[in-house]
Image (cartoon, rainbow, N blue to C red):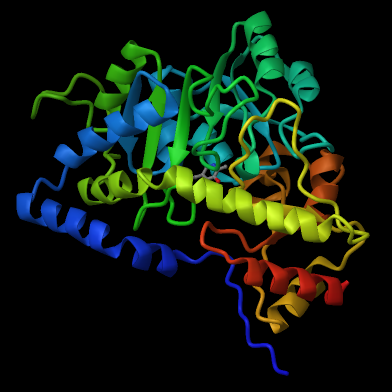
Length: 374
Ligand SMILES: *Cc1c(COP(=O)(O)O)cnc(C)c1O
């Protein structure tokens, strides 16, 4: 029998088709009202998202990268200041720091969970350190209590990179995005809550900071042609906000779909030797599985991905090159061997297809193919 099952890495088309009537209607409403820039749907979505995250305020911006960048600007963190973050992340975390003119100070991740290593953070704090950006990577919260301990001891600000953790919680139910001084979310299409284009959100409980950010994203202005500070043009698009409002109502269901798929993978892969399943940290309440990252020590990573591809399975690597080894950050002067845990992980991890609508049959197919390839 010829098996023709194909399993994409993500499946945006199925999600759109399932919500087509609602999304088309929301888009139509914006087109009717023509309030394209900072329109009614933006405010509506900001309020709904703040309430979802359990934060006082939410400020819609152009992207997740801009969210982190503007938070730093809003806190007056820039040239001469150091910001600590982890090398095992998407490069945008670090680009936000350099966009603000501050100096990124990278640390390794932990072997146990691939998340920022608080012990390493403690070691690089200097008199110039202003902030720590923990990344809730793959949909799992960073060790926020340990990070908060260091931040408190040295009077540092915590900025959460929540781009992969919409709906994730700590074991005491605190949602990602409600814990630090502020948090940056991304609505890049493939994120747990994805727009039909770029978009981002800042959440914070700090009203004063929220007001500054509302200025910064809009040319430093709230009253037209009156500019209080030098700002940027980085607003969440009204059309995207309308679409995101529709999808937010389904986010818990999406995340449940991901968790269900993670369960299917775990059941089937538990007994497969040589495959290390995604760790669950003890401080994690809800893991929202933005990615399902397994580790296959000693594997030929690209060979494995090619073999899976031949079976119709799209897999990926998140991320193949840690930030400190990217040419873009050669100026940090860090070379191979600087962060051994992240470097080793980057050579052994494989991200399996993960999206809310994935079926049990598709997971079966992925696991069968992976078994065969090993
Ligand atoms: C996606 C992502 C970002 C950037 O978000 P954009 O909306 O694409 O700018 C930042 N950090 C992490 C960890 C991400 O996954």
